[in-house]
Image (cartoon, rainbow, N blue to C red; front, top):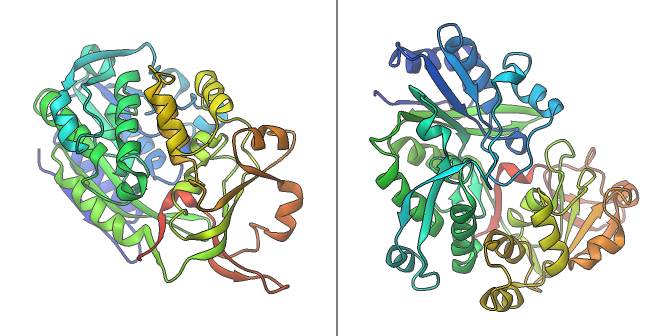
Length: 423
Protein backbone atom coordinates (compact mmCIF):
# COMPACT_ATOMS: atom_id res chain seq x y z
CA UNK A 1 0.00 0.00 0.00
CA UNK A 2 0.96 3.66 -0.33
CA UNK A 3 1.80 4.93 3.13
CA UNK A 4 0.39 8.26 4.29
CA UNK A 5 2.22 10.76 6.47
CA UNK A 6 0.61 14.02 7.65
CA UNK A 7 2.19 16.49 10.08
CA UNK A 8 0.75 19.80 11.28
CA UNK A 9 3.06 20.70 14.13
CA UNK A 10 1.85 24.24 14.78
CA UNK A 11 -1.92 24.35 14.41
CA UNK A 12 -2.89 20.69 14.29
CA UNK A 13 -4.61 18.57 11.66
CA UNK A 14 -8.08 19.85 10.75
CA UNK A 15 -11.21 17.72 10.66
CA UNK A 16 -11.28 18.05 6.86
CA UNK A 17 -7.65 16.95 6.55
CA UNK A 18 -8.28 13.95 8.80
CA UNK A 19 -11.37 12.90 6.84
CA UNK A 20 -9.48 13.23 3.56
CA UNK A 21 -6.50 11.22 4.78
CA UNK A 22 -8.67 8.37 6.03
CA UNK A 23 -10.54 8.41 2.73
CA UNK A 24 -7.28 8.04 0.81
CA UNK A 25 -6.39 5.08 3.03
CA UNK A 26 -9.66 3.27 2.42
CA UNK A 27 -9.53 3.88 -1.33
CA UNK A 28 -6.61 1.49 -1.33
CA UNK A 29 -8.81 -1.27 0.14
CA UNK A 30 -12.01 -0.93 -1.96
CA UNK A 31 -13.28 -4.52 -1.85
CA UNK A 32 -13.14 -5.30 1.85
CA UNK A 33 -16.15 -7.09 3.31
CA UNK A 34 -15.05 -7.67 6.89
CA UNK A 35 -12.90 -5.26 8.91
CA UNK A 36 -11.47 -5.23 12.43
CA UNK A 37 -10.52 -1.91 14.03
CA UNK A 38 -8.22 -2.07 17.07
CA UNK A 39 -8.17 1.25 18.96
CA UNK A 40 -6.82 1.73 22.51
CA UNK A 41 -9.14 1.76 25.51
CA UNK A 42 -10.28 4.80 27.46
CA UNK A 43 -7.00 5.06 29.38
CA UNK A 44 -5.73 6.54 26.08
CA UNK A 45 -8.61 9.00 25.81
CA UNK A 46 -6.29 11.75 24.49
CA UNK A 47 -5.09 9.64 21.57
CA UNK A 48 -7.67 10.89 19.02
CA UNK A 49 -8.31 7.20 18.35
CA UNK A 50 -11.96 7.48 19.33
CA UNK A 51 -12.60 10.12 16.67
CA UNK A 52 -10.65 8.17 14.06
CA UNK A 53 -12.51 4.96 14.88
CA UNK A 54 -15.84 6.73 14.46
CA UNK A 55 -14.85 8.06 11.03
CA UNK A 56 -13.56 4.66 9.92
CA UNK A 57 -16.67 2.89 11.17
CA UNK A 58 -18.98 5.30 9.33
CA UNK A 59 -17.10 4.89 6.07
CA UNK A 60 -16.56 1.14 6.23
CA UNK A 61 -19.88 -0.05 7.66
CA UNK A 62 -21.73 1.09 4.54
CA UNK A 63 -20.36 -1.89 2.61
CA UNK A 64 -18.63 -4.16 5.12
CA UNK A 65 -19.10 -5.89 8.45
CA UNK A 66 -17.00 -3.90 10.94
CA UNK A 67 -15.96 -4.94 14.46
CA UNK A 68 -14.11 -2.83 17.01
CA UNK A 69 -11.84 -4.56 19.54
CA UNK A 70 -10.24 -2.16 22.06
CA UNK A 71 -6.62 -3.09 22.76
CA UNK A 72 -7.19 -3.76 26.45
CA UNK A 73 -4.09 -5.78 27.23
CA UNK A 74 -4.64 -6.57 30.91
CA UNK A 75 -6.90 -3.55 31.50
CA UNK A 76 -10.53 -3.93 32.54
CA UNK A 77 -13.11 -3.80 29.76
CA UNK A 78 -14.60 -0.40 28.93
CA UNK A 79 -17.97 0.27 30.54
CA UNK A 80 -20.96 1.75 28.72
CA UNK A 81 -20.09 5.31 29.72
CA UNK A 82 -16.51 4.99 28.45
CA UNK A 83 -17.67 3.37 25.21
CA UNK A 84 -20.06 6.26 24.59
CA UNK A 85 -17.46 8.92 25.39
CA UNK A 86 -14.96 7.28 23.04
CA UNK A 87 -17.15 6.07 20.18
CA UNK A 88 -20.29 8.20 20.59
CA UNK A 89 -23.44 6.71 19.13
CA UNK A 90 -21.54 5.79 15.94
CA UNK A 91 -20.25 2.35 16.94
CA UNK A 92 -23.10 0.13 18.19
CA UNK A 93 -22.42 -1.97 21.25
CA UNK A 94 -22.99 -5.19 19.29
CA UNK A 95 -19.99 -4.27 17.11
CA UNK A 96 -17.65 -4.11 20.15
CA UNK A 97 -15.50 -7.17 20.86
CA UNK A 98 -13.81 -7.64 24.26
CA UNK A 99 -10.28 -9.07 24.33
CA UNK A 100 -9.66 -11.53 27.18
CA UNK A 101 -5.89 -11.85 27.55
CA UNK A 102 -6.14 -15.01 29.66
CA UNK A 103 -8.20 -17.10 27.22
CA UNK A 104 -8.60 -15.59 23.74
CA UNK A 105 -5.14 -15.93 22.23
CA UNK A 106 -3.32 -18.24 19.86
CA UNK A 107 0.43 -18.77 19.70
CA UNK A 108 2.16 -17.60 16.51
CA UNK A 109 5.67 -18.63 17.51
CA UNK A 110 8.28 -17.33 19.88
CA UNK A 111 11.15 -14.91 20.35
CA UNK A 112 14.14 -17.22 21.03
CA UNK A 113 15.95 -17.12 24.36
CA UNK A 114 19.24 -16.17 22.71
CA UNK A 115 17.56 -13.16 21.06
CA UNK A 116 16.10 -12.04 24.40
CA UNK A 117 19.48 -12.55 26.04
CA UNK A 118 21.19 -10.39 23.42
CA UNK A 119 18.52 -7.68 23.69
CA UNK A 120 18.75 -7.60 27.51
CA UNK A 121 22.54 -7.98 27.63
CA UNK A 122 22.13 -11.29 29.45
CA UNK A 123 19.66 -10.06 32.06
CA UNK A 124 16.65 -11.94 30.68
CA UNK A 125 17.72 -15.04 28.71
CA UNK A 126 14.26 -16.55 28.33
CA UNK A 127 12.11 -17.53 25.35
CA UNK A 128 8.97 -15.41 24.91
CA UNK A 129 5.88 -16.86 23.22
CA UNK A 130 4.16 -14.56 20.72
CA UNK A 131 0.38 -14.62 21.17
CA UNK A 132 -2.46 -12.56 19.70
CA UNK A 133 -6.22 -12.69 19.90
CA UNK A 134 -7.31 -15.60 17.72
CA UNK A 135 -9.71 -13.42 15.73
CA UNK A 136 -6.77 -11.68 14.08
CA UNK A 137 -5.89 -15.07 12.62
CA UNK A 138 -9.18 -16.89 12.16
CA UNK A 139 -11.73 -14.07 12.17
CA UNK A 140 -11.84 -13.84 8.39
CA UNK A 141 -10.96 -10.14 8.26
CA UNK A 142 -9.94 -8.61 4.92
CA UNK A 143 -8.42 -5.62 6.72
CA UNK A 144 -7.22 -5.00 10.28
CA UNK A 145 -6.69 -1.36 11.30
CA UNK A 146 -4.62 -0.76 14.44
CA UNK A 147 -5.23 2.79 15.68
CA UNK A 148 -3.18 4.33 18.47
CA UNK A 149 -1.01 7.06 19.91
CA UNK A 150 2.77 7.29 19.91
CA UNK A 151 3.85 8.86 23.21
CA UNK A 152 6.68 8.26 25.71
CA UNK A 153 6.05 5.01 27.58
CA UNK A 154 7.53 3.31 30.63
CA UNK A 155 7.76 -0.22 29.19
CA UNK A 156 8.41 0.16 25.46
CA UNK A 157 10.02 3.60 25.37
CA UNK A 158 7.62 5.04 22.79
CA UNK A 159 4.12 3.54 22.81
CA UNK A 160 2.11 1.98 20.03
CA UNK A 161 2.93 0.34 16.68
CA UNK A 162 3.29 -3.42 17.27
CA UNK A 163 2.79 -3.04 21.05
CA UNK A 164 -0.89 -2.36 20.27
CA UNK A 165 -1.07 -5.91 18.88
CA UNK A 166 1.32 -7.97 21.02
CA UNK A 167 0.24 -6.41 24.32
CA UNK A 168 -3.12 -4.79 23.51
CA UNK A 169 -4.47 -8.01 21.95
CA UNK A 170 -1.76 -10.27 23.37
CA UNK A 171 -1.61 -13.10 25.86
CA UNK A 172 -0.17 -13.82 29.28
CA UNK A 173 3.37 -14.81 28.31
CA UNK A 174 4.19 -11.93 25.96
CA UNK A 175 2.70 -9.36 28.33
CA UNK A 176 4.43 -10.90 31.36
CA UNK A 177 7.86 -11.46 29.92
CA UNK A 178 8.24 -8.35 27.75
CA UNK A 179 7.30 -6.19 30.73
CA UNK A 180 9.74 -8.01 32.99
CA UNK A 181 12.55 -7.80 30.43
CA UNK A 182 11.96 -4.04 30.24
CA UNK A 183 11.85 -3.60 34.02
CA UNK A 184 15.05 -5.58 34.58
CA UNK A 185 16.85 -3.55 31.90
CA UNK A 186 15.77 -0.33 33.66
CA UNK A 187 12.74 1.87 33.08
CA UNK A 188 14.57 5.18 33.06
CA UNK A 189 16.80 3.90 30.24
CA UNK A 190 13.72 3.07 28.17
CA UNK A 191 11.48 6.10 28.75
CA UNK A 192 11.20 8.12 25.54
CA UNK A 193 13.62 5.85 23.63
CA UNK A 194 12.55 4.47 20.22
CA UNK A 195 14.72 1.34 20.15
CA UNK A 196 14.19 0.21 23.72
CA UNK A 197 14.69 -3.43 24.80
CA UNK A 198 10.94 -4.19 24.78
CA UNK A 199 10.57 -2.55 21.36
CA UNK A 200 13.23 -4.87 19.98
CA UNK A 201 11.22 -7.85 21.24
CA UNK A 202 8.07 -6.57 19.52
CA UNK A 203 10.06 -5.78 16.36
CA UNK A 204 11.25 -9.38 16.18
CA UNK A 205 7.68 -10.63 16.56
CA UNK A 206 6.38 -8.15 13.97
CA UNK A 207 9.02 -9.12 11.41
CA UNK A 208 8.63 -12.87 11.88
CA UNK A 209 4.89 -13.31 12.45
CA UNK A 210 2.96 -10.27 11.13
CA UNK A 211 4.73 -8.68 8.15
CA UNK A 212 3.34 -10.16 4.93
CA UNK A 213 1.07 -12.53 6.85
CA UNK A 214 -1.81 -10.34 8.09
CA UNK A 215 -3.71 -7.51 6.30
CA UNK A 216 -2.68 -5.20 9.14
CA UNK A 217 -2.32 -1.42 8.75
CA UNK A 218 -1.14 0.87 11.54
CA UNK A 219 -2.65 4.34 12.05
CA UNK A 220 -0.50 6.24 14.56
CA UNK A 221 -1.23 9.61 16.09
CA UNK A 222 0.72 12.30 17.92
CA UNK A 223 -1.34 14.63 20.10
CA UNK A 224 -1.09 17.37 22.72
CA UNK A 225 -3.61 19.05 25.03
CA UNK A 226 -4.32 22.77 25.20
CA UNK A 227 -7.05 24.24 27.37
CA UNK A 228 -8.91 20.92 27.66
CA UNK A 229 -8.77 20.37 23.90
CA UNK A 230 -6.88 17.47 22.31
CA UNK A 231 -4.92 18.56 19.24
CA UNK A 232 -3.88 16.07 16.56
CA UNK A 233 -0.44 17.04 15.23
CA UNK A 234 0.56 13.91 13.35
CA UNK A 235 -1.11 10.99 11.58
CA UNK A 236 1.12 8.30 10.08
CA UNK A 237 -0.44 5.34 8.26
CA UNK A 238 1.18 2.24 6.81
CA UNK A 239 2.27 -1.35 7.18
CA UNK A 240 6.00 -0.75 7.68
CA UNK A 241 7.92 0.56 10.70
CA UNK A 242 8.43 3.95 9.01
CA UNK A 243 5.14 5.51 10.20
CA UNK A 244 6.04 4.63 13.78
CA UNK A 245 9.50 6.15 13.39
CA UNK A 246 8.06 9.40 12.02
CA UNK A 247 5.45 9.54 14.77
CA UNK A 248 8.06 8.84 17.44
CA UNK A 249 10.27 11.62 16.13
CA UNK A 250 7.42 14.13 16.40
CA UNK A 251 6.29 12.80 19.79
CA UNK A 252 9.80 13.14 21.18
CA UNK A 253 9.65 16.78 20.14
CA UNK A 254 6.14 17.58 21.38
CA UNK A 255 5.62 15.18 24.31
CA UNK A 256 8.97 15.21 26.10
CA UNK A 257 9.31 18.22 28.37
CA UNK A 258 12.85 19.20 29.32
CA UNK A 259 12.86 20.78 32.77
CA UNK A 260 15.85 22.90 33.76
CA UNK A 261 16.23 21.51 37.30
CA UNK A 262 14.75 18.94 39.65
CA UNK A 263 11.90 19.91 41.96
CA UNK A 264 11.75 19.24 45.68
CA UNK A 265 8.01 18.66 45.28
CA UNK A 266 6.20 17.48 42.17
CA UNK A 267 2.39 17.31 42.05
CA UNK A 268 0.55 15.37 39.35
CA UNK A 269 -3.15 14.81 38.68
CA UNK A 270 -4.94 11.67 37.53
CA UNK A 271 -8.16 12.39 35.64
CA UNK A 272 -10.83 10.35 37.48
CA UNK A 273 -12.57 9.41 34.23
CA UNK A 274 -9.32 8.18 32.69
CA UNK A 275 -7.32 6.53 35.50
CA UNK A 276 -9.04 4.44 38.16
CA UNK A 277 -6.31 2.09 39.46
CA UNK A 278 -2.67 2.46 40.44
CA UNK A 279 -1.93 -0.10 37.67
CA UNK A 280 -2.58 2.61 35.07
CA UNK A 281 -2.49 5.63 37.38
CA UNK A 282 1.18 5.10 38.13
CA UNK A 283 1.86 6.92 34.88
CA UNK A 284 1.83 9.82 37.32
CA UNK A 285 4.99 8.29 38.82
CA UNK A 286 6.69 6.90 35.70
CA UNK A 287 6.41 10.03 33.59
CA UNK A 288 7.41 12.55 36.29
CA UNK A 289 10.00 10.68 38.36
CA UNK A 290 12.92 12.13 36.41
CA UNK A 291 12.16 15.66 37.67
CA UNK A 292 11.79 14.76 41.38
CA UNK A 293 14.83 15.73 43.42
CA UNK A 294 16.63 13.20 45.61
CA UNK A 295 14.86 13.26 48.96
CA UNK A 296 11.91 15.05 47.40
CA UNK A 297 8.22 14.20 47.30
CA UNK A 298 5.83 13.27 44.52
CA UNK A 299 2.17 13.93 45.31
CA UNK A 300 -0.25 11.97 43.10
CA UNK A 301 -3.73 13.54 43.17
CA UNK A 302 -5.93 10.52 42.45
CA UNK A 303 -9.62 11.28 43.04
CA UNK A 304 -10.83 8.39 40.88
CA UNK A 305 -8.37 5.66 41.91
CA UNK A 306 -10.31 2.91 43.66
CA UNK A 307 -8.15 -0.22 43.24
CA UNK A 308 -4.56 -1.32 42.70
CA UNK A 309 -4.94 -3.76 39.81
CA UNK A 310 -7.07 -3.73 36.67
CA UNK A 311 -8.15 -7.27 37.52
CA UNK A 312 -8.49 -9.26 40.73
CA UNK A 313 -5.29 -11.24 40.17
CA UNK A 314 -3.03 -8.19 39.78
CA UNK A 315 -4.84 -6.30 42.53
CA UNK A 316 -4.18 -9.20 44.88
CA UNK A 317 -0.48 -9.37 43.94
CA UNK A 318 -0.04 -5.63 44.54
CA UNK A 319 -1.72 -5.79 47.92
CA UNK A 320 0.42 -8.76 48.93
CA UNK A 321 3.89 -7.59 47.85
CA UNK A 322 3.63 -3.79 47.45
CA UNK A 323 5.85 -1.22 45.78
CA UNK A 324 8.82 -2.29 47.88
CA UNK A 325 11.74 -1.63 45.55
CA UNK A 326 13.58 -3.50 42.82
CA UNK A 327 16.01 -5.50 45.02
CA UNK A 328 13.19 -6.97 47.11
CA UNK A 329 10.94 -7.75 44.14
CA UNK A 330 13.83 -9.28 42.18
CA UNK A 331 14.64 -11.47 45.16
CA UNK A 332 11.03 -12.70 45.24
CA UNK A 333 11.12 -13.18 41.47
CA UNK A 334 14.22 -15.39 41.72
CA UNK A 335 12.39 -17.45 44.37
CA UNK A 336 9.61 -18.08 41.83
CA UNK A 337 6.98 -16.02 43.63
CA UNK A 338 5.82 -14.35 40.40
CA UNK A 339 5.73 -17.46 38.19
CA UNK A 340 3.17 -16.76 35.47
CA UNK A 341 2.65 -13.24 36.83
CA UNK A 342 5.83 -11.44 35.81
CA UNK A 343 3.85 -8.38 34.75
CA UNK A 344 3.06 -7.88 38.44
CA UNK A 345 6.74 -7.98 39.37
CA UNK A 346 7.56 -5.52 36.59
CA UNK A 347 4.78 -3.17 37.68
CA UNK A 348 5.85 -3.25 41.32
CA UNK A 349 9.45 -2.47 40.37
CA UNK A 350 8.45 0.40 38.10
CA UNK A 351 6.07 1.86 40.67
CA UNK A 352 8.74 2.15 43.35
CA UNK A 353 10.79 5.29 43.91
CA UNK A 354 13.64 2.98 45.01
CA UNK A 355 13.90 5.11 48.14
CA UNK A 356 15.10 8.13 46.15
CA UNK A 357 11.97 10.17 46.91
CA UNK A 358 8.65 9.63 48.68
CA UNK A 359 5.35 9.03 46.91
CA UNK A 360 2.15 10.37 48.46
CA UNK A 361 -1.01 8.98 46.91
CA UNK A 362 -3.96 11.29 47.56
CA UNK A 363 -7.17 9.29 47.26
CA UNK A 364 -10.72 9.73 48.47
CA UNK A 365 -11.02 7.62 51.62
CA UNK A 366 -14.11 5.84 50.35
CA UNK A 367 -12.17 4.68 47.25
CA UNK A 368 -8.87 3.58 48.80
CA UNK A 369 -8.18 4.10 52.50
CA UNK A 370 -5.09 5.35 54.29
CA UNK A 371 -4.41 1.81 55.53
CA UNK A 372 -4.65 0.35 52.03
CA UNK A 373 -2.32 2.91 50.46
CA UNK A 374 0.25 2.64 53.24
CA UNK A 375 0.14 -1.16 53.10
CA UNK A 376 1.66 -1.13 49.59
CA UNK A 377 4.50 1.23 50.51
CA UNK A 378 3.19 4.69 49.65
CA UNK A 379 2.31 7.60 51.92
CA UNK A 380 -1.34 8.67 51.96
CA UNK A 381 -3.21 11.93 51.91
CA UNK A 382 -6.93 12.65 51.82
CA UNK A 383 -7.68 14.02 48.37
CA UNK A 384 -10.53 16.15 49.70
CA UNK A 385 -8.12 17.95 52.03
CA UNK A 386 -4.88 18.12 50.06
CA UNK A 387 -6.63 19.34 46.89
CA UNK A 388 -7.52 22.52 48.79
CA UNK A 389 -3.79 23.28 48.82
CA UNK A 390 -2.88 21.71 45.50
CA UNK A 391 -5.98 22.51 43.49
CA UNK A 392 -5.86 20.96 40.00
CA UNK A 393 -8.36 23.56 38.80
CA UNK A 394 -6.04 26.47 39.59
CA UNK A 395 -2.52 25.05 39.27
CA UNK A 396 -0.81 25.56 35.92
CA UNK A 397 1.48 23.07 34.23
CA UNK A 398 5.09 23.73 35.20
CA UNK A 399 6.43 25.74 38.12
CA UNK A 400 4.00 27.18 40.67
CA UNK A 401 4.68 29.22 43.81
CA UNK A 402 1.98 28.91 46.46
CA UNK A 403 0.87 31.87 48.64
CA UNK A 404 3.09 30.70 51.52
CA UNK A 405 6.13 30.53 49.22
CA UNK A 406 6.25 26.76 48.60
CA UNK A 407 7.48 25.98 45.10
CA UNK A 408 6.11 22.97 43.26
CA UNK A 409 6.27 21.56 39.74
CA UNK A 410 2.83 20.53 38.45
CA UNK A 411 1.93 18.00 35.74
CA UNK A 412 -1.77 17.96 34.89
CA UNK A 413 -1.86 15.17 32.30
CA UNK A 414 0.99 12.70 32.91
CA UNK A 415 -0.28 10.20 30.31
CA UNK A 416 0.49 12.69 27.55
CA UNK A 417 4.22 12.98 27.99
CA UNK A 418 7.49 12.57 29.82
CA UNK A 419 9.10 15.17 32.05
CA UNK A 420 12.85 14.97 32.56
CA UNK A 421 15.93 16.88 33.60
CA UNK A 422 18.72 16.30 31.10
CA UNK A 423 21.47 15.69 33.64
